[in-house]
Amino acid sequence: MPLKRVVLEIGMGTDIRGADYTKAAVRALRDALWHNTLTVDCLGAATDSMQVEIHIGVPKPEQVDVAAVLAVLPHGTGTVKLVEGGLEIFNDAGTGSTVIAHAAAVVRVNLG
Image (cartoon, rainbow, N blue to C red; front, side):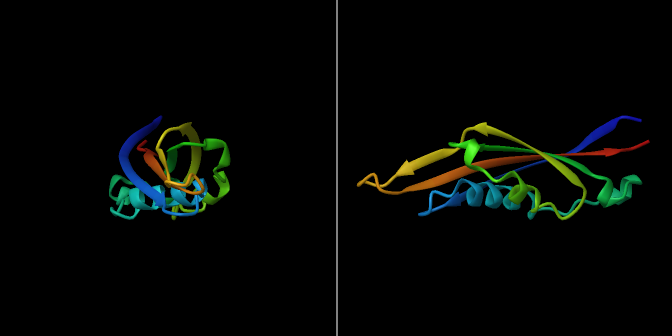
């Protein structure tokens, strides 16, 4: 049986002063995942059987450490798709910035 999409979670994360795109991305995924309890076991699926498709929108996607983002997942396996998005807001002097990342986690399980 094909995988069925059972959950879509969204979140936002920031790095206020460090302009660290990975830190903002990790915080966005944590925001998405830590506001729920996934009880896919009630569907007859083990939590570790979840497949999570992670989408991260951040101003400089090439600067995100994918392994650090995947390490956030407490269960299942995941893939990461990075796209240009989010926001970067520079300080008045142009010497630093705040980075805002957005995350979406699509959870699929085999319900067969």
